[in-house]
Image (cartoon, rainbow, N blue to C red):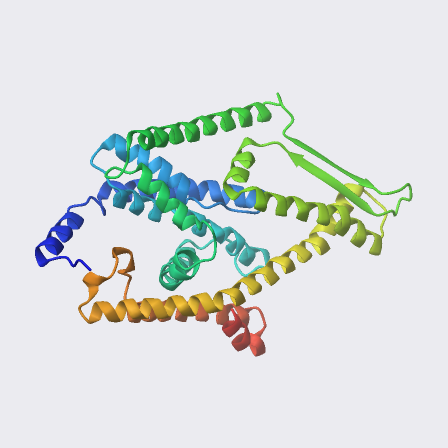
Length: 369
């Protein structure tokens, strides 16, 4: 088996160090993309109830922009997409923080407290990504995890490894993003100007009895939602469609029959949806989340073992034998930072439970949370 000489190792190290990677322009571009994608994700999350991953769209835009600026590399594009990928997770605050206002714990959004919550959770998420990268990407049973797909896009379209076809492809990708945005904005203007009907909704009773069960439908035409569907994929789209059919085809008629009442069909249907059917969907989400966590226990343990082995190899002076992608943050530092982040989160949960009048259950809710 051929081994590299010290000169070859030094040359490889020099080449690695000379690569363009962590740059000011890359960070600025990543921050700009994060702001744009976070705003879009928050809007669509509130409108459609789901957010989308921003890694691959960020890569497409990053490759086109950095290639136009010149002297770029796959590593620099990776930095940009890593920064921009936080938009998909940061926007998930819309599923948590508004709840504080709904239950009356907050009367508004305290800026610095919201920033502290997001920062603490974000740092904890970065620490979790060390073992989870192995569990969900490198050692995953998925045929093509998003992280792998994103890496392939970067490899075929970035500076030091790109060919002519991939350069043209990245340019076409950016044009498609821009054209799609313009068409979507133009259609929205036409809908607001009442040139097109963008929303068709109707509620009705299933029978002639004034206390008969109710149901309804609500169809919205939006190019932006078409784009979301393209990003989340056909499987997620079908799941949402089936969920809507179950909710409005069975759930609303069933619960409205159990609590029959006369009056406006539309108000009754939406009240039934809000007070009964929505909780069924929340329960389905909770069960799927718990099941996912149970399935992740074994892969996460394996990822932790691999991360510990990699950390030990580096401490033993064998870092050169590890692949560049295995040079993670040391596990002991990951554990320390995670503990520092968990403490204020536990205080937040305990304080919330105590303030909400759940004092005797505060410890259980804090540990469970």
